[in-house]
Amino acid sequence: SKPIGALNEDRYQEFKKRYESMVQQQKSQGAQHNHHQDAPFMYGTHYSAPGYVLFYLLRVMPEHMLCLQNGKFDVPDRLFFSMQSTYESALSNTTDLKELIPEFYDPDCFDFLINSMGLQLGNLQTGERVDDVILPSYAKSAKDF
Image 1: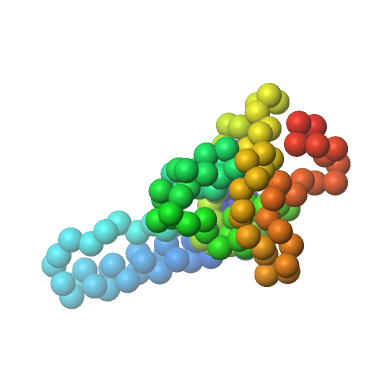
Image 2 (image 1 turned 90 degrees about the vertical axis):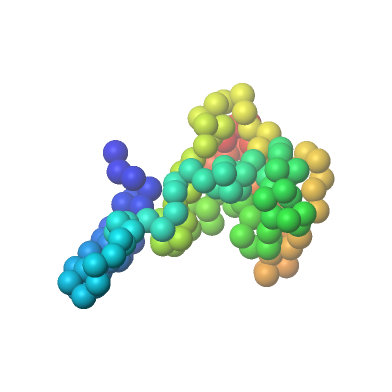
């Protein structure tokens, strides 16, 4: 199995390039300065930060997201609104390292995909209202997904 950052070869190469650049920079700076430097890294964030988990659980735990976001929901285009857009972002965006949470693997846990509280999550730039998560066409419902 591969880490989330290596699922797309082009994106993985970008992470590797950043890491190698940091190594080279530290070597050149280390020769000039004799002080502590942070170790080079490939990913600038952790794959399972609380914000990433709450990204998926917004519809069932909005109060936690509101605490994290200073009392407001994030910009609608950055919310979990579509499986397809989330998948595409995880494959291409170098700042998106979200992995799936356990709820995706539990057939009895599908409520996180449904806006049963009627939360006002705003509209995307396309004008589309953010409501239930948009599922792949093969899924007849959130429970089916």
